Amino acid sequence: MPKKITLLGSTGSIGTQSLDVIRAQGYEVFGLSAHSRTDLLLRQIETFHPKVVCVTDLDAAGRLEGALAGRAGAPVLLHGAEGLRQLAAMDGPDVVLNSVVGIAGLGASLAAIESGHDLALANKESLVTGGHLVTQAVARHGVKLLPVDSEHSAIFQCLQDAHSARSLTKILLTASGGPFFGMKADQLRGKTKEDALRHPNWNMGAKITIDSATLMNKGLELIEAVWLFGLPPEKIQIVVQRQSIIHSAVQFSDNSVIAQLGVPDMRIPIQYALTWPERGGPVAPELDFAALKVLTFDVADEETFRCLAACKKAIAKGGLGPCAANGANEEAVKLFLEDKIGFLDIGRLVEAVVDSDAFGGSYDLADVYQCDRMARAFVHSHL
Ligand code: NDP
Ligand code: MG
Image 1 (cartoon, rainbow, N blue to C red):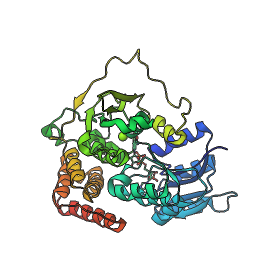
Image 2: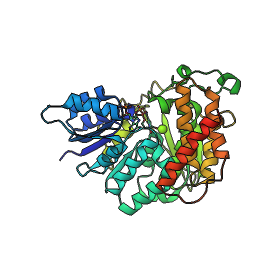
Image 3: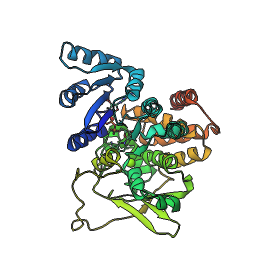
Image 4: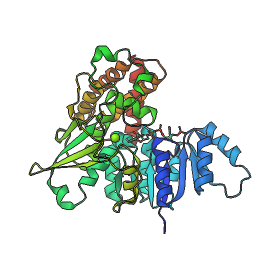
């Protein structure tokens, strides 16, 4: 029986690459979701014949409803954030892959887990904003949390036998350094969104591409790694690996290091999350060691790239600190993409919100959303 997948955020960079993998594996699609790109979603419906789709933007949902009217075999159409949670919770798929961008993915991650589904997670913001809630729900419902993020997939791949997991002492989380690697604040001040959207190695959605330029992405990933692998933040070292060939590494009690390598192509980690514990066929080109002349290593510059420093402070504070950092960043990136703030303002605002409160302590889902709203309001009052 082919596996059945519900894919949330199917129109995005991870979403479309996930559909490549699903096609290559001969899997079936149970559900799809998009926010507003209904033209692409409609083509995906025609190709993959999902049983259920959700469009979270209400105007766009109306457009898709019109386009599907009277079509034989049209999928059930859900809408809004509640529709996304309903889709994530529905019986039918063997695994839910969440590739929504931002905290908008948190509710669906929790709904999938609480309904007993294994969750392949690209939406790192679920773990950053609600790591405690997500990991507790995973333990309570006995489901699998399968990392899609390339670094976390690499770490996961290096820890496949139980002995390795027990002897883990350190994670080496690699970073490309982004398009502005080596630059100082003076050179960064005038950078535009066009400059920041030009990533050297990866072709990704706009938000994560900006996060890669500010190194916020690496800060979010450090927090993601703390929740996924249970090491404290000081045991996770960020290593700049400019070629994005070493996707991350782990170190054991005897100081032996094991790394995972491959071409920078997200279809490899996406496929591993879907085929785990098996491996699928060659979904991306092989790494050409004859052409690969150098692998370089550098230290990340937290003095200049304040988002990374802010994320470290946020996870050290604990509680809702990471959620506040994430909310401020989502809002600041939106303003930067609208040309309303400068590049360096992103780091300034994220750090300021983290410095504004103690944040520690336990929280529930309502607290997460309230903290997210606070952080976004904080950004607007500190422009
Ligand atoms: P994209 O912006 O390309 O895609 C985002 C997807 O989420 C789209 O389907 C979009 O719909 C949908 N979406 C947007 N806003 C909402 C909302 N408010 N509610 C529900 N759905 C929404 O992002 P990426 O694919 O680049 O990234 C997705 C996630 O994966 C992020 O968390 C990112 O950090 C993570 N990730 C991405 C990598 C990459 O290579 N791209 C690598 C590792 C992790 P629509 O198209 O209609 O707007
Ligand atoms: Mg990554």
